[in-house]
Amino acid sequence: MVRYVHQKPRLGVTPEWSITMTHRHDEIAEDVLSYFLRNPQAADNLEGIARWRLLSEVIHRSVEQTSQVLEWLVSQGLLLKVAGGLSEPVYCLNRRRKADAEALLAKMLGSSAENEAKQPPDSLNGQVPRE
Image 1 (tube, helix red, strand yellow):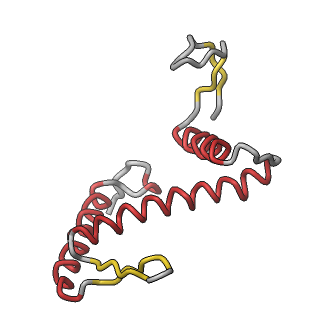
Image 2 (cartoon, rainbow, N blue to C red; image 1 turned 180 degrees about the vertical axis):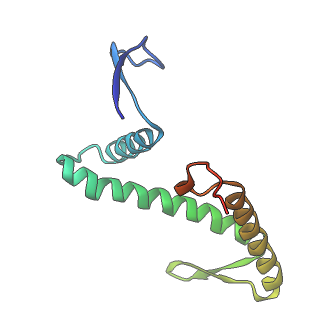
């Protein structure tokens, strides 16, 4: 839900009216602004922005996050980063640390499963089913 509310200017923003947005709207606004700031010559209609530009931002963000994770896994010795000559580096499992990689993944999956078990399913709306 988007609502217009009267607010005092924040962080140097001078408009008298601003938009109160949900968390998802904040993410979309961040994606749109990031795209146009990286590509100031760009112009498109609503559908084009929604379909192509935002998808491009999501992919861009995903690539950045994946890069950070890959570098962390390399720094932990779980993955190897192999120089590709003229091409980009290639990543592969460090076979000598396979057991460590399996243990970390099991721990990560266990934490995820534990967190899901603590939360009631959405379909129950917080109600405990009767037996």
